[in-house]
Length: 105
Image 1 (tube, rainbow, N blue to C red):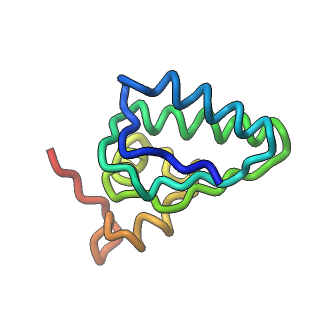
Image 2 (cartoon, rainbow, N blue to C red; image 1 turned 180 degrees about the horizontal axis):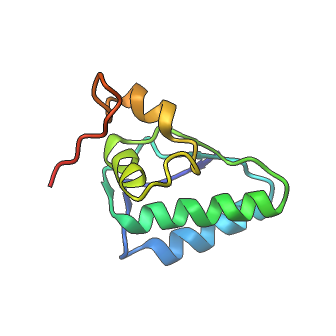
């Protein structure tokens, strides 16, 4: 399992992306986001890139432990279903009882 550190932002996205692609090439198919406390749009971009890479290899990437902030960003950009985060976002409380995403600015 590829376990992410506490931060995935523009500052470290290139390094995290490269390291993750190397792990995917070795057959890794699960990403644990449980430690993430700092994310921005770069985190969504990295996950999408990993998802594309896994799909090109015929693998399914499983993303677990998604923090609500990351799930909210993915929903805001309309890619939560591409990353298959919808059920996880509900489980982590990113959505209210009606299923809408609450955005904090």
